[in-house]
Image 1 (cartoon, rainbow, N blue to C red):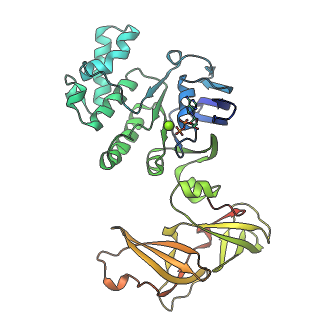
Image 2: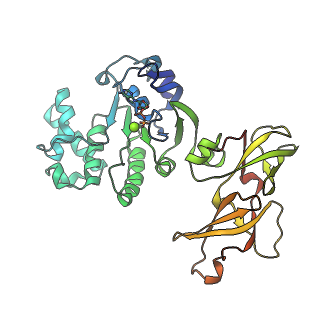
Image 3: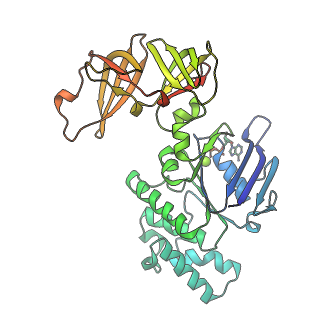
Length: 365
Ligand code: ADP
Ligand code: MG
């Protein structure tokens, strides 16, 4: 594999105080599906627009297929952008909408027809060829917008929150469809989203952004299992954070003193005894222990609250120092009333050392 896009030290300063993107270096492989993920205002759209040529960087270089395109206009780049609001022409048929860009390029009728049909078949809407956009549902309009983008056969497709206008059910369905479309066409996709599930479900690689910078990038599972900071641990999935101090280190295992007890953790990087840390545990990696059961890595507390959410229970446990952790537990087939622990019950919570994240400093987000 080779890099199709190389961003080198890219920054965008809108003004001396408004920094949209701050020194981003990133290579995207040919055919990859990369997602830029982060909260509103962290610079995702600005970065995407610079790749598309709709915005000029104030610093840095952008290469597309080994060619410096930093200051090339959009039409001189083999890149196409799908906008959030689809921007379909209401007075044109679906087929005319999809073929419009090719017509502007001056392609012949037969060639346009072949490519329009091919693109509509790819998104599963060939039978809508003669309809107008307003006769289609939101999800279908989005697929037309996609067909219009891929019909020009760009090397890279840029998608800025492409599913955000759709309702939850349809969005889930389109996530899978868009992923399949990516596999079929073999074009590089770079997508922007603030929805972590969307990023995890769809991407080969996720780039988590924080205040214009890359906080961490990697395969979805690596980010989930090895977040580099509390920011990432909190943005991808849910994490309980507890302040603590490293009491002892033996090889890659650390024993951490917390207000409510002690936990062993597997360290990703070396840390010295005495270091103040923030410990992170995901609710689904914590387990309420049965009475009389013994385990090595345990926190003690009392049930403070039980929330039923269909798939399971989220149980808030108050530790002896007053801090709370959430424990998720999936329910067995049928919810036995006895399976729901009463508020106030003393409980022990177990966690495996490799499921305990340790971050240096008092840095809970
Ligand atoms: P995101 O897409 O992650 O929500 P944006 O890239 O839109 O973030 O914005 C990043 C930062 O740059 C924000 O602080 C935003 O207010 C600012 N910004 C974006 N576009 C402009 C613009 N055209 N002029 C001035 N500031 C902008
Ligand atoms: Mg945006």
